[in-house]
Length: 156
Image (cartoon, rainbow, N blue to C red):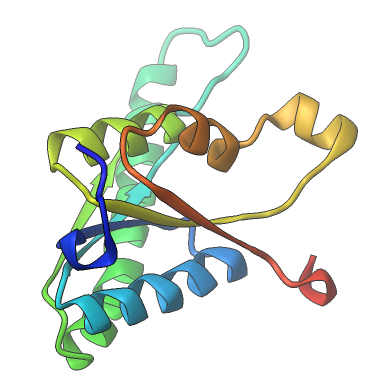
């Protein structure tokens, strides 16, 4: 059920890909969590690799790749968790693998998140058409409010 006012926000989801715009979203999500005494969940989605014409033996390589990506994500999230805990905010982390937008939506619904705070790279035109926009899909399909922060122009 969507939050009716700010005081009803008790659980904030911050998806991250460790980019500058995701870090800005973390700053914003952390500030909201502190002000509202809400808990924070940090989510990183490891996209499943797609290889054209995958042959015999590729399965093992995919498993190793995925495990390495998950381990790197857990290490990065450990630093984020320390920062959040140092600010006095309760935090949990999740590393998952799937389609990023669907994973964000699934975790938001399953965890009864009141607000999603996420960054967007701000791609437009052909780049947006070809790559799609995770943020745009989350905004369109989420059952809770979504706050999106853009990457500053000078960093784009």
